[in-house]
Length: 249
Image (tube, rainbow, N blue to C red; front, side, top):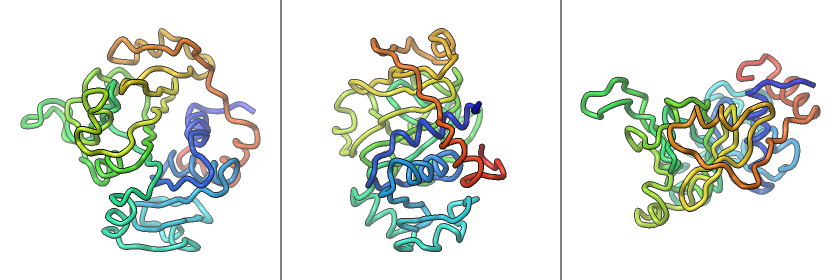
């Protein structure tokens, strides 16, 4: 079966999740990735949504974090404040999914402004819960289209901290965990010594394509892999059960 870039990203994101992980999900690709993982290799995955549902098992595709389908069959429904304070700030969530307008070489994310903060070229939606997620989960997974303007050497504004300014940056600020991987439509990037490097290229993508779409002299792994494409079973689950109308795919 042939697949799209989005389906490859969903499959790659799902592969980063482990059985018995607790995951602060999001809508769209992260939601599909979590539900795909739960139905394949990680049946013990516990999905938590920002709206306060814990242990969600949505019977159909949720269209927002406030979709009632997330509450039906959930283990618990908390207030937004309790979800963030007891679960997230309390260090009880393993993984968080994030995206943003810019992601730099240290995994810092900008979703606040493009340009100068006081006189921006573009003002963006801001943090929402993203800064809290990036600061408190053990592993952050970032999903973003791979374009040079989205991957500058340094973000215009740090909305959600990655490894801040390098090794020891998170510890200095009292932050838990850190970014584990950045999944794009061209590659999977991982981190070493607080800096992003290319761990695998998607099938058909070249080093030059990734280098041209990255705003710094990005390093490639010595044992550079090719990203494993989604299996036929995964594609069937995605297309027939998880997103049959193609809302996000």
